[in-house]
Image (cartoon, rainbow, N blue to C red):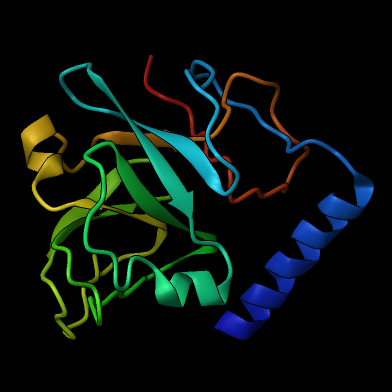
Length: 183
């Protein structure tokens, strides 16, 4: 399915939800976010193998324009911030660092919530960066943060409000990703 078709489907789903005037469906088994995020942002949690949960405030890059722009031209970012690129369907995502002066860690997140790869994004580099497997999202954070926090492949990722009941079957929300965490 082409990116325009996926974008059209995403726009349709988001438009229907907006027209219904409903609050975003949520669900899962993690604790509710500790603080309110600004519009267009969500709390993202990474459960490391050590048992530590790392929390980030991330901007959502959902539509084509947001995903193409990403963190271009950004000079700085707080240590506990980032940008998440959620996909309607898992895809073998490929990123580059065109016009991005800030070095980044790119965390490729599988549909089951595990981190498939953590790859280095070098400033302004035009070489494609990919995990080489289908992922549900890519998280960009400051370069070196994953290593400094002990985040590694296989760690688990969730974002949004995962404390509320599960949404209806086949519902997708860019602001919520709540695969079950290990017990």
